[in-house]
Each structure stands twice: as C-alpha cells, then as structure tokens.
Length: 354
Ligand code: SF4
Image 1 (cartoon, protein in one colour):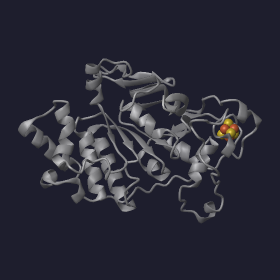
Image 2: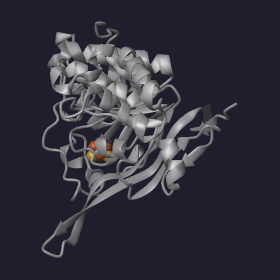
Image 3: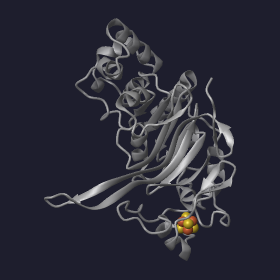
C-alpha cells in the first residue's frame, strides 16, 4: 500500500516533486572558451505532479519550460535542486546523484513526447525499430515478445500492425505523433513529459491527438507534464497550470481558477491572446508588449517589470515572494492582492473526437 505524501497542508499522492530546480548554461567565449556568463534557463522552479494528474506548463518561447521537462526526465543534468520521483514503495527518491542502476530503473517510469513529429523520428528506422528501441535498451522484451509488444503499442495509439515495417516519411504528421506516443508508452511509464506535442499539427489533428492522450491517461493511469504555449490546448487537457516567465514559475493554480481569475499580470496578458467566443470581450484585450527578457541578463526584481502595465518602483528592486493567495492558487507578484485582473470565461467545449 502506497503512503500518500503531504503537501500544502493536505494529503496528496505526489508522483513527481521538483524543488528549487536550476539549470544555468555557461556562455563561453574565445579560443580558451572562457565562461563569461550564464543563461539562467531555469532559475528556482518548484512544483509537483500528483498521480493521474496533468500539470500544464505554459509560457512564451524562451521561458525555460522545455528545459524543465528535459531536467525532469534527466535528458540534461540540472545545475542544482531536487527532482524526486515516487518509487515502487511509494517513497519519493531524488533522481539527482542516484546511482546509474537505480536511475535506469526509475527512468523507465518517465518518458517524453516531442514537439516535432517530423524531426523526432529517425527517417532511416522502421516504425518497429523506433517503437522497440526503449524496450531493447532496457531489456524489457526481445524476439517474438518484442514484436507482439510493438503490435500492442501500435494498436493502442490507433495504428495498425501492417505499419510496423514502414518508414516515418510514409506517415502524416498526426500518424507520426502517434508513433512517438507509442514509443513513449513502450516502457510503461507513469509520467509522460509532453513537450508541445500538438503545436506542429493541423488544428483538426490536434484534437485527435489530445483526445488520444486523454484516453491513454485514463487507460494507464498516467500523469502528464504538458508543456505548451497555447493556453486553449492546456485548458482542455490540464487539471492545474503553472505559468513560467524567464526561468521562474510566476503563477500556479487549478485550471479553472487560473483562467477565470488570474492573479499575475503575465497570466492576464497570455490569456488575452486566447480566442474568445464573446465579441464584447475581444475589444478589452490586454496586449503583451515587448519581447521576453534575455535569460542571460534578466531584469532585476520582478523579471516581468519592463512589460508590466502595473509595475511600480518596488518591482524593479525586489523579487516578489511566492505566496498562496487562495487554496491551491500560488502567485509571485507584489500586488497580487490588490490587482483585479481580467480572465476568460471557461469554455466547456471539448475538441471533436476522432
Ligand atoms: Fe507587475 Fe510588479 Fe507584479 Fe511584477 S511584481 S507582475 S512588475 S506588478
């Protein structure tokens, strides 16, 4: 029997807990490759994902969300912080500094779906090779059993056994993403990091892949870290949403609460870009001006202050603290309690099914 963890004062079954995660990439110059600075891609990120939950991680390009995902599956080494994953005994184990054999075992429990189904599949490999590779590498299956497992995985994602011996170029974008999902499922993970899994697809195909991911979540009890820049996609799939800006999470809440009652000005501006069904609301949009800050030289204080319409002197000096402003609703803004920000009405419409 697994023992639940306690977080934020109430009992939860935490599958993944990330604490004060940092990833700083050195900037090297000259013949001797002298380090002249650091890109603070991820700068003190903390969140957790419960079993069977989807956490959406949103932000503009350059906010650091993909780097978080890559640190979580240990595709890259974090600079510091903790990435704890629930082991088979229900205990959270820090993956950083773990011995290779233990890490390999826990790594199977987390896999990744990539953004570009064209670039992420090796064009020289058959579908069977692509889907079977993680099983081979982890010695989970071989021979006839391996073939049977590949067939099972292809059927699970809506492909056919006859597709096994074809190459990626003979598939559409949606089918390629299904191949990527079959591969991600092969080691029977408990957590999938989905990095913009539908952003390269046509809108009609996006709906099919999102519905497939939802179905798989129920069927296999999966949890997702769902990385996206499109809030309408996250609204459909995530129970909670974390908003990232220049390496930091600035707001995190239940999806409904974040969409209808945002408490951070950056979230308000991102939501303003979400298409609205009500024509009266379209004219009241809060536009997001300027470019995202350079993570190699972020502005002092609140990183968002050069673009924030509510900024005051303190915002340029002091980093806002992280506070729980309502149950399960966290924000980092000096004026979160005073501002009345504009959300969007929650759409009850789900994308059309296959
Ligand atoms: Fe804007 Fe200041 Fe809040 Fe940052 S702390 S989001 S600059 S009001």
